[in-house]
Length: 314
Length: 276
Image 1: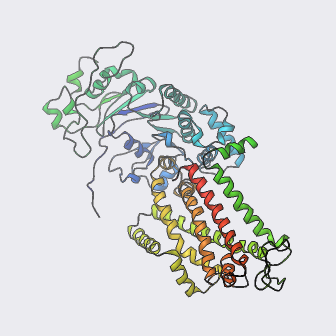
Image 2: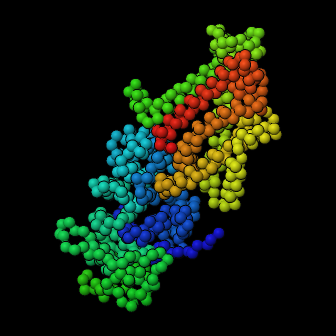
């Protein structure tokens, strides 16, 4: 048997989520977005990972070291999860009705009629037309957008307080993507659900979310209100914002961020963005990645030099 | 309705599935129901013996004067019925063990069971079956026990391989994230996706098992006289093959009919699902 080295995958991640808030979580591939989300539903162990230290407070309950039994009560009931690659999310051999029934039928037993009416209600909620017909169909008969809606329907079946949507729009075309995002917003308004929306797409996040959390190499580097993105106080967020494609006012050559994010296990000491940062100083490499500097109630940055770099602008 | 039927037949493998299942169901229904409508019992002595096929006895009479047609049909429960049991038990047991193996994190348990599976699969089925009959004694139900003891290993291997793949599928991950219990995921999500493959194998295995049942009976190791069974009938009839061909040809043809019917179904289904 081989003993593999323990790796830190996410380190110094921190954010706040208010009830009914739509929070966008953004970062490059491999920056730990999915791992962070998994820690919120307690399915890390499946992947051989665990929460080493820190605290996850959900509705006053400490979840960082919750037991299997505790998670069973929370996962799917209080925290719904819309998984990545929802196109392969539905079980191919079960009819839609059966899959929804399963999501509905957690906890106390319900009669077949109750389950069915709830399933139809859910399908209507996620705006699937002709729900009675769809209930009898198999996943292969649904389009990508419908499958994604179905996964959302399953996630909200128990009226969770929080929905974690891990890249819910990957693999969908732009129109469908917009519809899905609308749907998530509507769900939040109707049920006062908090939503964590994970994406690579800063512009998309910026346009739908209340708050944005930016991750880089396993660290949350900044949390700020979506409207404040141009006033961000971290060079990485700045650079991300600068590298957007602006269709309204094209700005000539597209700005890029140099280099690659450091790989897991080979993280440098100090700030992990240092090697790619235009404003890097020795101080950046010597100071440990600190949790956030609180700039205002809704704005936190992890950059040690945020005052020097952006000081005048805010 | 007719249009849907035509559509079904027109799709790849449609002919095989329809022709095969029709042939098979015809034989099975007529066979199982034959005691209800056949004028003779399978062990009833009607004539003096060895009577050539005629309108009254389409397949003739055997050396003891029993109606061969009645016996060929009466053999259906013994052949198809026993083969069905001999496929279902290993299918169910093997699939359960296979899924357990895929789920298990206990390395010792997994490697021990895997070695047992490899060991059983290493023996030629018919040879070891004959050896086991000599321990358990002849009899159709002993054949079922032996087939279960031997064949589960093949199903376990198929199920394990498939379950490992399925467990890594996105929809299982999704089910886990929905907060479904482990039991529910295994029963409702893993098992149905695993059995689709096992069932396909079971259908082709059915042919082999029918041949094994009749083969063992031919050797006098499964069905005992006076029970009607194709293999046993062929064995009894081969002494008279010179003067009474109908004793061996008709049971043989019926056996072929069953095997061809199942082969057509397997072929059709595999074409439809592009398994080959």
